[in-house]
Amino acid sequence: MKLLTAEIKRKLSKLGANEDKEPSETPIVVKFFHPLSDWAWYATEGEQTEGGDFLFYGLVRGFENELGYFSLSELEGVRVKGLGIERDMHFGSHVLAEAMEKRI
Image (cartoon, rainbow, N blue to C red; front, side, top):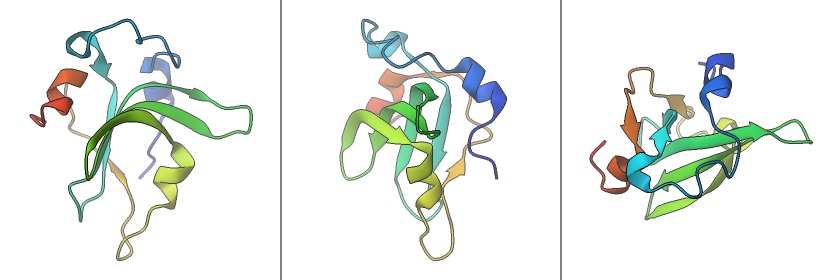
């Protein structure tokens, strides 16, 4: 499965574009997850780096909830029991506050 499509790239705000918005106003563009864990990555912003990678900003829900940066190469490099990170193909319209409250 392709984690990052041209459509997702178009929908993502540039890095830093949402910093003045409240979590209840910040749309999540894409959700990534690993099928064998509770870990999830909710991207609200992103852009291509000079080195050719793609850098996202959003919420990482793992051992704790943490706002921060994560890269496409990091997501693509995860393998647990032969399975990698997947994109939630059925993820609807949600805002960051919902993910922070673990409602999605």
